Length: 189
Image 1 (cartoon, one colour):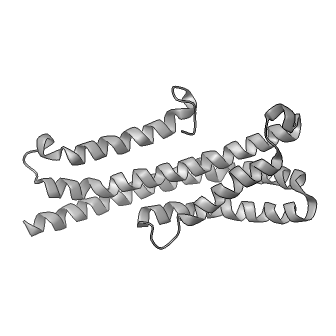
Image 2: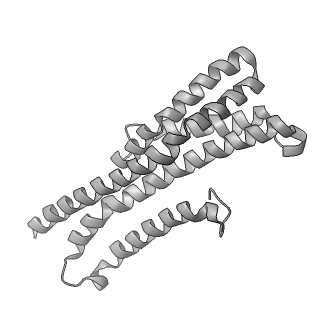
């Protein structure tokens, strides 16, 4: 999890997981919940929404990991590797680069459409790390980490305002497409 369970920091991720779990439970037990609507129609309605919640969860984890990497870099810069227990090189090799690789892999052709859309919203993370990799190659890990943290904080408006808005839009489109999938499934009956 991105936050310690039971704390306020874990609330957004917990909300996403609970919502996806409830939708999945409703989809699997829909014959018992709504006996009037055929099971296949209700599952066709709920599947896109469930899929989008899982994709949003993946994006949320990557944004939180990138944010945590920035704060860990800042702590290591200010207090040193001995005090934080991790060096800047480790943060780059174990946190930042794998996060960007995971974000880039969300856009691959084998991914579902909702996952690709979340991957597209994470392209600024790849651009940000690309810029800081250039700084890193010319000046070293200290200035590269400082530029990563500064650029990540400059993109805060994107992570906290644009990304949630895009997630709401994605869920809205999933709900509309679910209605159309349900209508198509209902027409088959």
